[in-house]
Image 1 (cartoon, helix red, strand yellow):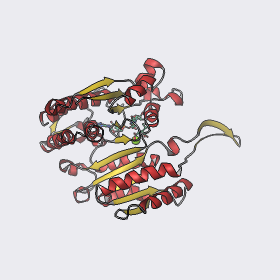
Image 2 (cartoon, rainbow, N blue to C red):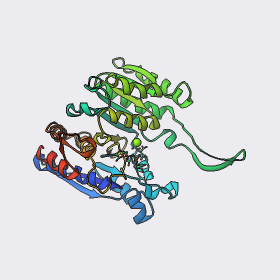
Image 3 (cartoon, rainbow, N blue to C red):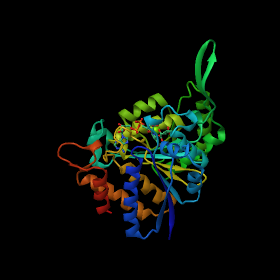
Length: 355
Ligand SMILES: NC(=O)c1ccc[n+]([C@@H]2O[C@H](COP(=O)([O-])OP(=O)(O)OC[C@H]3O[C@@H](n4cnc5c(N)ncnc54)[C@H](O)[C@@H]3O)[C@@H](O)[C@H]2O)c1
Ligand SMILES: CC(C)[C@H](C(=O)O)[C@@H](O)C(=O)O
Ligand SMILES: [Mg+2]
């Protein structure tokens, strides 16, 4: 067995969290004999500083030639004033597009040990186990845009949202397939009372649903969904939604789970899949060695499961994270009186010891 993994640390806390996840991967490799090898590539502001572009071609090529990509995060205030086409965020957007990663799976499962960390009452959080299936390479993110123009004597900017039936059809099918393997419920989230794209979205999802009689479909407007996530998150199994709504709802859902630092994701499509935590480069804590690496570690577990089909190794990582939490270790984002504070390096060691 041998597998090639491309690691893209990126900016801010990106290096700290990917170093941590690779350490954990090395530990499972030792135990399960997976034969993992790593190629490190630049992306984001760091790549812009070195090469004048946030996404060098050889980063894309390395991703395509590997069995899975582990991505940290990109972005930071330092690059706020660069040409918008060269912003660090263009690196992750470009990778998603170049690799055809049309679906982003963002599971939200609350570890027993973290139930009390949610801003919601424990009885509302216990048993939360949902997955947001976010469309990732369409919608307003990738429509035509104008940074600035004169219109009726005033400056304006615009971003166009568009979705085609095939784009909605493929993400809806993936959501229904996902629901079939889970609790059989899809909630499609849109703004069909206002937006034409959402009405096409809703019609297309309904059509796909006809082929899945055993899966229940219900539709929610995005504003209501945002509220429902805060008042009764256990009602959700699979949430399928567009690019922008999925971005916003997943950060909200992360809070239900106690900290955004815990949340992993898998971006899948037509080429190599990419795995990354849902959070960003956290410039406010970068370089301090205190970032929570567990979202990235759990993303690495998803890589083992979905790209390498190494289920036992994936489960070993997830169990080790659960055990570290159950044993009372907390990174600063989760720390409370009575618990053992662990920085990035320390929690990594604690997790490795539990593999
Ligand atoms: N996929 C990505 O690369 C990605 C995702 C989101 C944001 N970003 C970029 O990251 C930069 C910062 O964005 P932001 O501040 O809005 O969002 P962010 O997710 O980076 O941070 C939001 C808050 O959560 C905290 N946080 C995030 N991850 C954490 C972790 N692992 N452990 C502990 N605390 C953590 C941060 O300290 C901050 O207080 C921006 O440039 C943004 O565009 C990149
Ligand atoms: C950095 C940004 C482009 C990205 C997004 O909006 O998709 C991020 O917020 C995410 O959630 O992965
Ligand atoms: Mg986001």
